[in-house]
Image 1 (cartoon, rainbow, N blue to C red):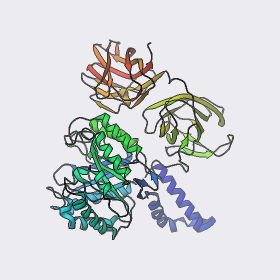
Image 2: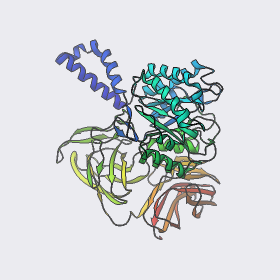
Image 3: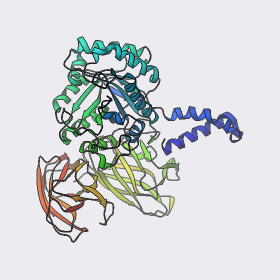
Image 4: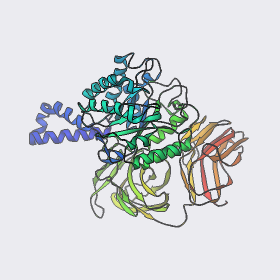
Amino acid sequence: MSKRSERRLSRLLEGALKKRLGKNWRRNENVFIFGLLFGCATLAHAVPPLSVQGNKVVSGGNQVSLGGNSLFWSNNGWGGERFYNSGAVGSIKNDWKSSIVRAAMGVDEGGGYLQDREGNRNKVISVVDAAIANDMYVIIDWHSHHAHQYKSEAIEFFQDMARRYGDKNNVIYEVYNEPLDVSWSGVIKPYAESVIDAIRQIDPDNLIIVGTRQWSQEVEEASWDPIRKNNIAYTLHFYAGTHKQWLRDKAQSAMNNGIALFVTEWGTVDASGDGGVNEGETWAWVDFMRNHGISHANWALNDKAEGASTFWPGASGTGGWNDGNLTPSGKLVKSIIQSSDPIPGGDDPGPGPDCGSVSVPGKVQAENYCEMEGVEKENTSDAGGGQNLGYIDSGDWMTYKINVPSDGVYTLSYRVASLNGGGILQAEKAGGSPVYGSIDIPATGGWQNWKTISLDVQLSAGEQRIGLAAVSGGFNLNWFDVTQKGGPAPNAITVQAEDYLVMSGVELENTSDAGGGKNVGYIDANDWMSYPEVDIPESGVYTVEYRVASLYGGGVLQFEKAGGDVVYGSVDVPNTGGWQSWKTIKHQVTLEAGKQRFGIYAPAGGWNLNWFKITKGQK
C-alpha cells in the first residue's frame, strides 16, 4: 500500500472510531481497531467496476485507456510460467504503473490446463490474488486457438473463477483468446454465449471479453452480429510490424457499428512475435487506442529470446527489474504504460476531488490534481481562499487534465509562495516526457506570501494530461493559468539525451556538465537512441546542436527519423579533452512541420551526449 493509501486508511480509522465512541475514542480504540482495519482496507483497495457504455469500456463511468501487461502462456515448461507470481505483478504495478495484468492460461497445448488442471489453475489464482492486492484489473484468459472444442471445460473453469472472484471488480473474463478462421455466427458466438450464460449464473456483471475470428482481428464482422448480453466487449489483437492502418480501419468501423473493443494482446514487432520494434506503427496504435478509450495489455511479460519479450533472457521471474533487463520492446512498452491513464479513484497515486478537464484559456486550482506523489493540501490566505498545495519536495509531482484548442505557444502562469526560494517547477507531459519547460521559484518572503511567475511553452491541440514536477522543492502552489500567446513557437526545443524511449547499446552515467543530471555514454558504432515526439512548428531549415564529450574524437553522430528511414544529416565529434569535457557542436538540417520522433545513431562511436537542441533557422 502506498504512503498516501496508508494516510487515507489512518484517517478512515480515526473517523470511524470517533463516530462510534465519541470523545473517549482513544481510550477504547483497540476494541474496534481490527474490525475497522479490515473494513477500511477493503475500501482502500477497491477498484471501480468496468462496464460497457455504448462503444466504450469505461472505469467507474470514466472513459480511459488503461495500459498493462500480458503474461506469456502459463504452460508447464514453456518458460513464461516463472512470472506467474506476486513479485512480478507487484513490480509492474509499482514500477511501471500498470493498471492491468493478463493471466494467459494455456489450455490445449502441451503442459496446459487440460494436462495439468490444478497446476495451471493455481498459477492463475496467484496472479489474480496479486492483482487484487495491488489494486489492478486482471484478465483471466482461456488462452486457446480452439476454445470452442473445449466448451464444457471452459464452463467448469470460468464458473470456478466466478465463484472465487465474482464479487471483485478487478476481474475480467476473456473466454476465447484467438479463434482461427472459423465462423463467427456459427461457431465463436454460440460458444461464447454458452460460457457467458454459465458465468452469469454466478457473476451477474463483471466484464466479459470475447475473441473474434482470424486471431481476434475480424472485429467488424462481430459488430454485424453482436452478442446481445450484458457487459460484453470484443477482443482486438495487433502486432505493429504487421497490422497497420487497415486493421485500425476495421476497428473504427466496428466501433462505429456500436461495439466496445479491448486490446487484450498487442506487440511492437511483427505477428510472429519476433523481429525488430516498429516504433512508428506502435505509436500510431497507441494514439488510436488513447483517442478511442481502448484499454490494452502488451505481449509478453517474459524473457523468451524473441522480439516481443519484455526482458532479455535470464531476467528475474519475480520482479525488481532495471532498465538493463529490458529489451528495446520492453523499454518502449514501459514508457507507454507509464504514460497511460490511471485507474480512476486508484490509490497510488490518488486522484484529487475535482479532476475534470479544464478548457484553455483557463485556470487550474493546484489541489484539483488527477494524480500526485508526495504533496499535501493546506488552507491558503491568498486572494480567493480555498487550498494550496504545500510540503513540496524534490521528486514530487501532480498531473492535470486540460483541453488545448489548437497547436501553439501558451503562457503558463504559476501562483507560488516560498520562504527561501531555490525551487524549480517543471511542466511536462504526464509521465515525464516530453518536458515543456521549467522555471525557477523565487523567495517570496513567506509560505503564504504569493507571487505570479510565468513561462512560455509549446502545446499541442486536444484533451491531454500535463504534469507539474518539482525538480527542486521548497515552495507552495495555489493555481496555474494557461493562456494562448500566439506568434511563433519557442526558439528552441531541448531534449535531454537520457530521455530516450528506446535505445540499443548505450549506458547512463552522472555528468559534470552544467545543470548536472545524466548523460548517455559508452557509445559504440551502431548504437542508437530514439526520443519522444516533438512538435516542429513549421517546415524549413533548423540548427541542431549537440552537447558532446570525447577523449579521442573520431566519432560520428547521425540525426535521423526514429527508426532510421530518413537521415537528416551527420556531424563529426571532435576531441574535447575528456569524457566529461563538454563542447557544443552543430549542423543544419531541413525538417517538415508537424509532430515527429527523432533518433540519434552512431556510425562511429567513442563519444558521450548530454543533450541536443533544435532551433529554427541557421545559427
